[in-house]
Each structure stands twice: as C-alpha cells, then as structure tokens.
Length: 197
Image (cartoon, rainbow, N blue to C red):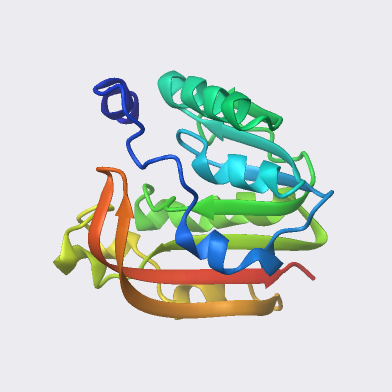
C-alpha cells in the first residue's frame, strides 16, 4: 500500500519540511548523538535530525520513499543512512541515543504493545523517545492518518506504554497542518517526549 502511494506521484507525499513539532521543540534533539527515525517515509524528519548534527539511521518499507529520503539528504548536504526494511525485519537490538516516530500509527491496537516494546528495546538507557501523531479526534477531522480511532494515541496510552520513564513533554492540541498532500487541514495531534530509565 505505502509503496503504491509513494510511487503514484513524483512529488513528496508529505512535503520536504519536517513536522512542525520538531521545529518548535529543538531541545528534543541531541546534537552529536545517534538517532533512529522509524518508518521515516521520504526522510523529511530524519534529514532534519541530520541537519541538527545527529548521526541518523532511518528505515521505511517503501523503496521509492527511501530513494527520495536519500535524494533529500544529498540535496541538503547531510548524511542519512536510509534503509529499506519493514518493521519486523529491523535490527531492534542496535542501540540509539534517540528514537523518533512521527505519524507511525499504522499498526492495529493489538500490535501496538510489541511496537512500543521495540522502540524501548532499541533506545539506550537515558535515551530519548520522540513521538508525534494523532489523537482519536483526528478521525472526525479526516485530514490524514488511519480511519480507525483505536489506532490513535491518548496520553493514557503513552503513559501506560512507558512506565517509569521521565516525561519531558506530553501535549494534545489541534492545529492546521499543511504537509504535502498527505496531511492537509485541521488536525488533532499529540506529542510525547520521554527519557528511558
């Protein structure tokens, strides 16, 4: 499905600018540290981390998206180790200082605990998890994301998924989002930044 969506147009589906959340919270990045950008699509967010001085590895299951991520990094003059992989095949034992997931709510709720466990496993002790996505209210707005509210996140879901972690930011809000043709219009968003014990 995702390969078809990316391959169906020559333009970047979600644009080339990073998620506004990353721009507004530069403190969440760790210059000089290692980062993993999971399911990073065409690389707009991974490239942003690399431009901030991080050593970034990213993956996505779409070869078209990964090719565009590499091209975007080259065009911006930054290094991005972008790879083609699905979620299950990724090397989750490899440690990173920061793990970032932006709009990664593609898994059904019964698979979400395993997804969150993978993110926790690959993050070093003391490392930072950076998540940004939709709340259930997004379904009614219909401006991006899956149509199932059960796939969205709430503060309660994220707190329960990472018990004992030091939460540095947890916020829900609505705003107009213009990120290519993939995300366009009023959106119900959630930010979660936390440190692993």
